[in-house]
Length: 244
Image (cartoon, rainbow, N blue to C red; front, side):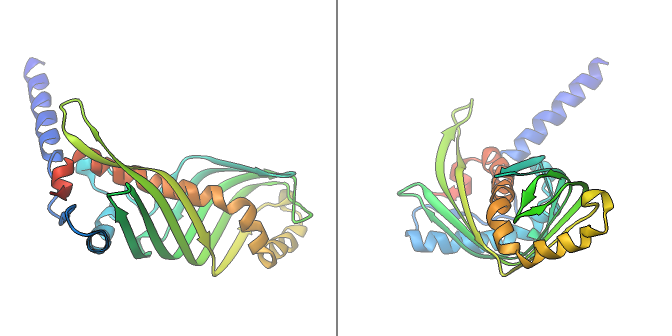
């Protein structure tokens, strides 16, 4: 048993040591670059690692970005409430990273992405939206086409227990515009024949619907993606991630 404990301890030390260095699939940028050149470098870097992050990075305990799993979400607007569980987002693997702006003088940044995203979840809802009574419990599918998303955030550094400096992003503020949205809710009104009509009404008025219930879902995606990226930041020293 003592030998097993020693072996386990060695494995832990080795894994931590490996995780303390920048992975080979990332080419670091220099923080001494002018803001526009630094932003160009980070944009290029992000595009290069997108496929790797989509699959997950086990050595940093980074889960896959596509499909992305989210915590349960609840939203309420007026007389309408929606509870979503087992939320899965698909499409980040192919999303177009259009721009990554980092300003280390002001400690702010922003990301602009464009593409198609699909939300899948179990839902439970009650109330009215768009004057339509919606009560049910079933499967919800939301397909967002040509979605233009801008995520603004703040940047800071912190020191770990050993005094090593790391990078962190926080305070995410997303805004979004949709080209088109398709919605389908199964088992509306307990499977009543009116369910198809209600789904049709929702799709005909998707702009009003997404304006009311869309923001919490988009913010959940932004927060989760940055939580995942921050795992990398917390595992790699700032001086390796952003060269002097």
